[in-house]
Length: 574
Ligand code: SRM
Ligand code: SF4
Figure (cartoon, helix red, strand yellow):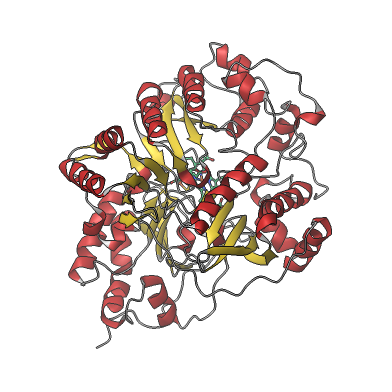
C-alpha cells in the first residue's frame, strides 16, 4: 500500500458489493449504456462498454449520443474447446454480435458489437455451452495461457491441466455473475463471499501462463507470472517460477515500462498452483491501489527488487523454493499446418490474420471453418499467436481441411510468407476505446508491401515477427517482436526493433513518429543489410542486435526511450 488515496476504480470495487453494482438494474432499464462504476465492474464479468469510434465525430456534431455496443471476451484456459462449443460461439456471434469471432493473443475469443439488449443472451448462451466470461477482464487473474498443441505427450497434457487448475483456483467466488447473467437466486453480499479477492480484488489485471522449456509459444517472459515447466525426457520435473513481466507503457512517460519477467526460483510440480496463488496474494496485499498506471505487479517488483519479493514469498510458502534452473533460449513453435499427435491422429494449425474469423471477398475463412467443424467435429484450440488448431483428425480429415480452406481462398500455412505467418495486430479502431492509430485494419496492406519487399530480397522464409498495435499498451506483444509498429497518433507510429521469436529480449525504439506510408521505407536499408549479411538462419531481431553490437538481453523499455542512433550506417556493405 502506498498511503495515498484510492483510485476511482478501487472505490467502485469497494462499493460494488462483490461485482454487483447496479448492473442488473441498468440491464433491464431503458438506458442505452452503463455509468462509470458499473462499467468498471462489468469488466470482471468479461465485457467492455465501447462505442463506434468511426461514428464518434459525426454523432458528436449532430449532438447525438455515442453508438454504444459491447465487447464480450471468453476466457478459455490453454485455449481448448470442443467443436460443438466452437459452433455455439459462432452462432452467438451471428445472433448477438457483429458476426465475427476473434481469437485473442491470450487464447480467448472476443465478440464485438454486442448491443445492450443482447448482452445477457450472449453471456447466457456462452455459459450454456459450458464456457464463461467471468474474469476474462478486470482486476483478477486473466485467462490462463498454456501451449495448446494437442501433441498428446505427458508434458503438453500437464500444461493444460495446470492451466485449468489455476483458472479454477483464482476464479472470483462471488455469486454476482450467476445472479446477473444466469438468473441465479439473489444473495446479499457478505465479507465471506470472496475469501481470496476480498472486497477490492487485485490492484490490477494479473496475467498467468504455463510454459514449456521446449516451446515458448505463450511468450512467457511477458507475463505477470509464469510457470515454466522444466521438461526432461517428456516429463515435467517442476517449474521455474517467473514474476513481474508486463508490456503496457505510455508514450513519453519514463516511469512506465515494458518489463520481462525474472526467475524467482524453482517450484516442485505439485506446488505450481499454490506458487501462483502466493504471488497473487502478495500482489493483492502490496500492489499500488492509488495510481492505476503503476498498479501492475511489475512495478512492485521494480520497487522491491527480486530479493525482497523472494523473501516475502518464502515467508508465506509451505514448501521450499529452490534456485531456478538455468535454461538455454527457449525454442518457439507456431503449430501451423499438419502435425502428428502421439495417439497417431493429426492436428492442423490454421492461420487467422489478426485473429479475426470473418468472411471477406475471396477469403471465406468463417464459412470454411464452419464447414470443417460441422463435418469433422474436431477439437478446437486457440494459440497465443491468434491462430486456431483443429485436433483429433485422421489423414482424410487433414485432406478435407486443406481442400476446404483452399476452396474458400484461405492460404495454407506452407504457402504463407514468414512475415505474414508470424504477424499479429490488436483490434484498435474502431472498437478499442484506447486506440490512437489503426492496427488490425492497417496490417493487411502493410503485410502486402513487406511481402513484396522481402520476396525481392530472397527473405520470404526468413523468420520475422512483425507486430502492430494502435497504442503503446502492447496487446499484440509488440515489445518482444523482431519489428513492431506502435501507434503514436492517427497515422503515426513508433518503430521498434530487436526482439525475436524466443520472446526473451525487449526491443529498442528505432524511429519515432513515422507515417504509415513510410514504415517500410524506414526499415528498407536494414532489410537489405539483413539479406546481404545474415548469419545462417538469423532472424531480423538477432541480426539487428549483432549489428548494433548489443550483447545483453534487454529486459525493460520505458515509455520515454530515445530513438536508436545508427551506430553503423545502414547501407548494404559489399
Ligand atoms: Fe489488451 C486494454 C485488447 C492482450 C495490455 N486490451 C485492452 C482493451 C480492453 C482496451 C480498453 O481497456 O478499453 C482492448 C480491447 C480492444 C477491443 O476492441 O477488443 C484490449 N488485449 C486485447 C486483445 C483482444 C488484443 C488481441 O489482439 O487479441 C487481447 C485480449 C487477451 C485476452 O484474451 O485476455 C489483449 N493486452 C493484451 C496483452 C498481451 C498479453 O496479455 O499477452 C497485453 C500486454 C501484456 C500486459 O498486460 O502487460 C495487453 N490491454 C493491455 C493494456 C496495458 C496494461 C498495462 O498494465 O499497462 C491495456 C490498458 C489497460 O489495462 O488500462 C489493455
Ligand atoms: Fe487497444 Fe492499444 Fe490494446 Fe490495441 S494495444 S487493443 S489500441 S489498448
